[in-house]
Image (cartoon, rainbow, N blue to C red; front, side, top):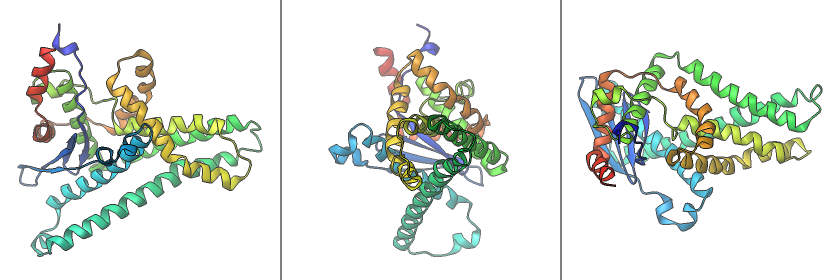
Length: 311
């Protein structure tokens, strides 16, 4: 069998950070960063999930909400960890009590996660609702309004991603995002993890957070077509309260997509994969080296490919 045609899910997930890549495998994660002096710094850590501790947190739908929140927290922490290599020299010279610093970072991370969720719900769930309400005079069908509202959500998301892609620093993050995907694809296509092999891989991956967000927006259309209430404030409340449920359902689809090559699943994954062309850019060799370093810190790809070859 041609090894390049083999695709085996590895379970590795990741995220681009400031001048680096975070990779996660089970309860281990690593943040690899290209420092200003050109060296690659790798910090490793562990992240115990509530899914391993409490049975209820690992039930379908609920596990999606838990994973989403935990991913946000780990993502924010990884961004914070990567940013410390680019602080001003004056900040580096300050002697800060480590316990106080850690507590401050936890508070900042918690606040940032909560604020991010509030802003996302406001911009991508509530704002489209109010825009669609303005069309009530010309659109009589509630179901059609729900579809229009969902399309507005998707267009807002695509427009937002397109706009920030022109920011220089964001463009570099998107390049590292491309390095993250290409590196994981190299592992899952059973190829040795080298810069040359990684460069040949696709920038798209079905388990990407971009695809997850698109699925959330798409599934919200289906939800609000069938969930109908007359009171405007109840409509707004439904859109807020149902966000965790929609996220949980979306996670189940992304989870299935990451393990399946079913033609229907692939077709449904296609729009999210296309949007990834905006959120990922072609990385240079130095970025790929960082992504490889991050993978190798948490994942034995040689053993993984050896075991798969024996199957």
